[in-house]
Image (cartoon, rainbow over all chains, first blue to last red; front, top):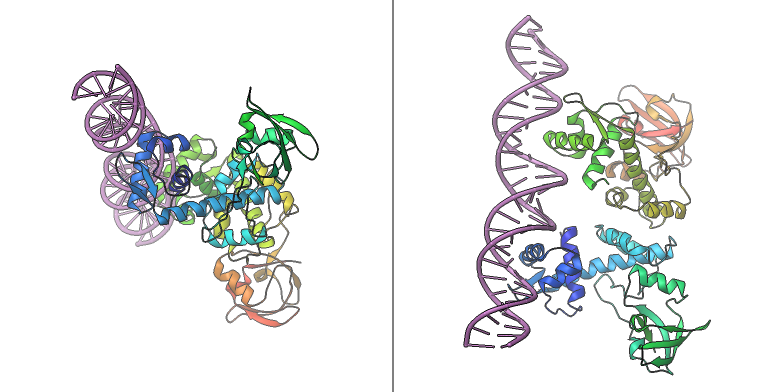
Length: 217
Length: 217
DNA sequence: ATATATTTTTAGTCTTGTCTAAATATTAAT
DNA sequence: ATTAATATTTAGACAAGACTAAAAATATAT
């Protein structure tokens, strides 16, 4: 059985390792988790002892198969709870992250399976991120950042890379939501801004915004 | 802000003090919480330091107004989550206690208010126990144990005192559920058993069962 | 290739919440 | 009213998870 703290480290390593099991540095984890590097070293050793991580001193950590499955189980819980909060309790998507950070550590497989059914077995959470099934499998919608889309092309907004409160509030304010059809009209090299068109309006977005919006073509 | 452990102690003291602020003994808490008496003494001191409890050495503890409010807030969360699990996720009432023990410590006032609304602001949980509102107020349905009901009288099963898995499973097996009308037919002094009648059948119950069934007349 | 900077690890400390064993109070019994 | 039994508290220890400061390893730059 994993502790709350262990689960947070597993999640961090999973995300930083880009899901494919790349080795991750101590400092990167420390930053992600907002802890000191020395604390990270301590915890990594514990994870390695429990065979959840592969660790070679000074060489970084990666997850074992079991560690990866555990990480995905936590992510599954996080995303299902976020979906619950938005779909059933009418939270706005920028409010749910902190609460889901707590809920993701509740231990009961039956609970999460029933929640999954209650929500209609969703495949993606309110930010467009894929929800792993109970075996850890998921399919990511093929999409690319507006940064990589040539003017003239359009697609459907399927996910946002940045899930920070500030960014989600920006999207709300500008009435951009998942599922919207967005057409890339123009790219301005001077400030690297884009002009995009939605059903309701035409607007200009900064490079910073563009790189966080993912469209499926 | 209270820790998970503190919240469990507050709940225990609240329940043992019969809600009216009676002083509770160290040993009683130790048994309730399944800890050693020395651990209880330590924690009591912390609660007193935080002004959540009144403590005089060797004389037991009682809750302060703030302690009582905190305890009721935790109980509110516990009972709302139990209601959610039974009503929305289709859990059986004997399965929900352990999960609610975890969920009751999730910190977000907004979450619990929205959950309350989502459930239709229920006044009682699946065991018939009252759910405090956000100010800590609740009304307990006036009811008495079958032990105290004279044969010939009837009432509606409004709550069960024992919420253990074993007892709830017994009730399920015998098709006794909250809301059922129950008539007390006979009392047998020899083994202190009762004969009761429900819509569907007549059955005999032991003293042990009778004392845990509460009817409103 | 060596010096410097950066990253990582180690050693030792702290807090929270628990425990055991021993000491002290309180309660019950003769 | 003592003594015996029970309840409670204190003292000291431990595990988890975090921290600081110092040491060691690795990476970078000249």
